[in-house]
Length: 115
Length: 114
Image (cartoon, rainbow over the protein chains, first blue to last red):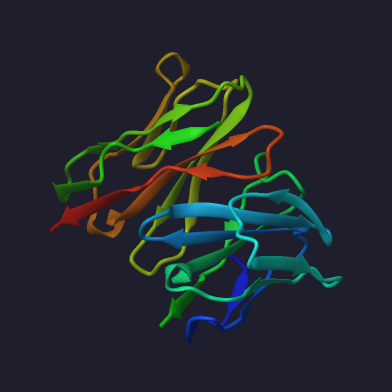
């Protein structure tokens, strides 16, 4: 158990809908990272927040957005969902803002299925 | 841009065999970090090792060992005396020192047969 929690574990929704994925980092970790794992794209970094502020952006679509709250939990919002958004979404956390220097601990993931 | 290649899509071995998973990376930066992660059938990602670009010393942890060769831009991972529990997808990843994101390879699916 990495100490990172993600809810829900599974999510099934329809095209065009909007969903919110939630992540609670390990106690004491200030950074949260979001990743998408799909069959065709593999594992891709989406976005990082550090202590409430956006720190780095990866291959995140404009239909997706994220935020980190004062209690350091993070939410990833996915809107106007398409079939291709079906994937496993991982959240990871690290102690500081440098995901390179500090180990990232991954949550169990949220599996999103868009029908 | 950074890139990580894991040429072996799938590998099958019989228990107790040694197996090496290859990882080749591309970056123009001189300072970077390399990682290996394991993703067992249960789906979670498990950190195995981090190596920075200044440390080419090989590392051994139990049955696991890593061979980092800057000259060939490779960071290979060897499992000695493989066990069924080693069956998983293994990802190699690269991150720049000042970068906050990771670039993952496509993964190698390892099946260890009893």
